[in-house]
Amino acid sequence: MSGRAGRAHVQTDLPGPRSVPLLADQAATESRARTYPRNSPIAVARGEGSYLIDVDGNCFLDFLSASGALSLGHSHPALAAAAQAQLATSTQLLDFPTPAKREFVSRLLALLPGPMRDRTKVQFCGPAGADAVDAAVKLCKTFTGRADVIAFHGGFHGSTQSTLALSGLRASMGHLGNLPAGVSFFPYSYCFRCPLDLRPADCQINCVQYLDNMLSDPQGGIGAPAAVVLELVQGEGGVIPARPEFVQRLSALASRRHIPLVVDEVQTGCGRTGSWFAFEQFGLTPDVVVASKGLGGGHPVAVILYDSRMDVWEPGAHTGTFRGNQLAFAAGAELMRQVTDDDLLGNVRKVGQLLRDGLHALAARYPFLADVRGLGLMLGVEMAASACWTASQVAREFQRAALCRGLLFELVGRGGTVARFLPPLNLHPAEAEEGLSILAAAAADVDRRPKPAAAADA
Ligand code: PLP
Image (cartoon, rainbow, N blue to C red):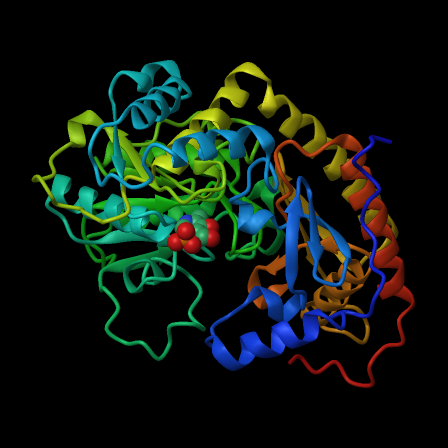
């Protein structure tokens, strides 16, 4: 076992006595829209590598990583040093060129597959994934002169009104009305619960065939779209990797019909799935790539990368005050140096496989761990209902049991039924083993827990 693994321990009830007043103060002063501390009621003192220490001294292995933004965990010395050095020079500089930005851009372009490298333009957006998705769709509309967009059931692209309009999650927007119109949703290759009720062995990828048919049908109800917007592994939708054949046929139909293909790599990008961008594993050349989360080495930054033939913006067509975050450029460049020089992606693939094998072994013991899936270090387990509990209840019990034993992760997917694991990309194998043994103990806790009288979903 490595010197740094084996640290997770919980010595108080959760929330602990020092966390309680901070959580209460937060509830009194902050909006009801707050999310993570509801399921994981802790107040944080500090982070150290793959671990998070709460104000009660409890230490959690952090498989949330600020929703994937902390590529190398908390306070990584080299990323901290890069940001610290930059802090003395400049922090925000709109879209002026700087040496820090130059280094960032050249490392980013160098990480693209050869054929894309020389013809890709980088656009810096406001520093959130949602702003970059918005920019991507605006660019495609400007380029094509068309207005409509194709999106997918279960997709998530942000919480602004324009990105919610592209997202499948209806619960949080039902009352908003008047979201941008013109988005048509089509089935995603969610084979565990096929939206067309087919089986992967003999389905012929009918989900993408259906889209093709609708675009060909003069009475299909949709016109030629400005863009197809796709996640290659749906994140918030439940860690659902697209079937490679689905992606390849989608890409072929988009190119045949001259529809720009926007790949939203906000969650899958920057090494998370074991390649720098997930699209590299799908034999795909997207027209637009959206990246954020891990890209700035823990500091906010968001970009779109697109084919230079699409560079049709007017000056100032997509602005934003915080487009020039020099700290993110400095830390992000150091992150990319580690990808290039230190085989960080090899670690993602190796430790990701270790975690995935361990999850499969657990799933073989506990039928409520129904489907293990993901790529690299973006992994998920979908829960199934048991005789007495709904799948959502099983997932909440599992999450709670793991937290009480020192592992932090979030629930995603329909009804929060998928445990999603986004550990740091430099996770040590011993830390992965530690996470697996906590998950094994949590599954055993859930298995022997007294069942509620009725399976009412909250
Ligand atoms: N796109 C995807 C695929 C995401 O997972 C997210 C956030 O989770 C976003 C866009 C929105 O990013 P942000 O929360 O930074 O606006």
